[in-house]
Length: 538
Image (cartoon, rainbow, N blue to C red; front, side):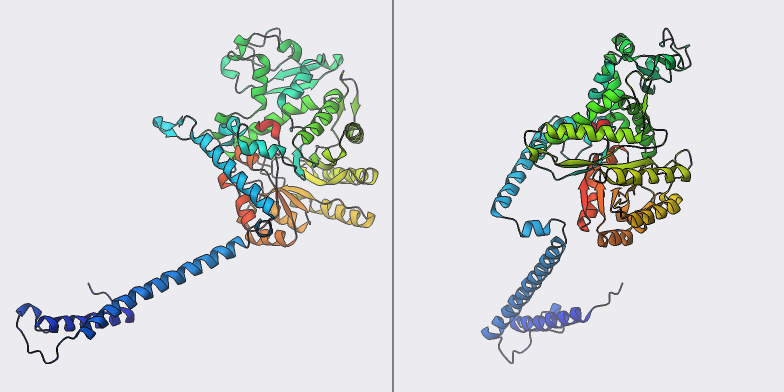
């Protein structure tokens, strides 16, 4: 096999040949046939000067290689500096004060201590008995108990935070808060779709609702909902349900079983057969469950106050909440006989906020909350138009309370029916023109890009959010897959409300380390970190 040599290789061969000849002459060997061992006359002796020249050549080659390596190192350093200069935190690091540098050093030390804490935990056993060491970046639900013991979590809780911008208002406090209130409500009912036999405990879907005495007769109320021959739905007072024996719930107290139904469990979120669509099915069942715990006046008022106190405890100075509004939306009276509409719900929010702020001893502990008017994306065009018009009326009535408009719900097809933003193009454009004419600032803050899809109407929502002038987008997980749209959003100053824990549990990323936020931050896209539906994610 013949190898073609480069000019540099040829030059090297010439140098080697010349050196060989010099060495041969020095050894008195025939340079033409070295193996013959025949001596040849020496016409010029091989002087010490010539030996030095050979050593100089070797030294020169070594010097040249060192020069090349040094030049490579400089180029590599230059590329690294160029990349760091584009980091989202570059200016903060360059302009850091001495105390900020000291704090950064302390945080790095605490992080090392946390890593050691995880490493010292007993490894978990996986398939075939393989041992998996614990580490800080593992599945959130696998690590949540350790995370809450970590130094960084403790520090993060006590650091002042400017804002929290992506909070679904019906799912932002621990589940026991609403469940404990419900337990004391005489007209609170719990309903299940299948009998509570051992094999049905996991798949039984439960709902809560406040019912008047007249409405109580609308639901079946079996004397015993445990026999397997009972095929239909069952309904009973929640207070009565809580008195049932633990034997019916695999050894759990009835309240603990209900809490488990509210919160995502590690096995169902990370099971080998689980998909994003499957996780969303579980999510939708949980949000349906939460609705009945939230939509009556006593719970709602207490919830607003507790949420505000939770913000203060977490040092969050400002927040924007996302209640869901629609024409069929009501807040029931505690006995189930009366209903309050969307405007009356807004009145309650404002009353409770004013009462809470008036009771603060330090006005700097908390600034304010505002409301993002949300309506389901599953609405038809007429219903969407009605929601947009109500949002305008709310902004005119409470200009300081309405922060923007959003559509919520599963972004991908539901039962093979799609609900992309472009479906409502006309309604959104009319809304924008109306706001402009009335001099109202109601930005679009759309959920979009919460998907693994590529080239469908689902990830196409990113295009419509951009063209409709969205000020922020919720999730934006798919945005790095669309570099042109990402660049345009960056130039327009669009902020992405990233929700890493939510995206992990709902199947978009296996762990936080592979979340899209790192690509967004690497491209210097504005981002905020948010909880989304914290009640469901522990």
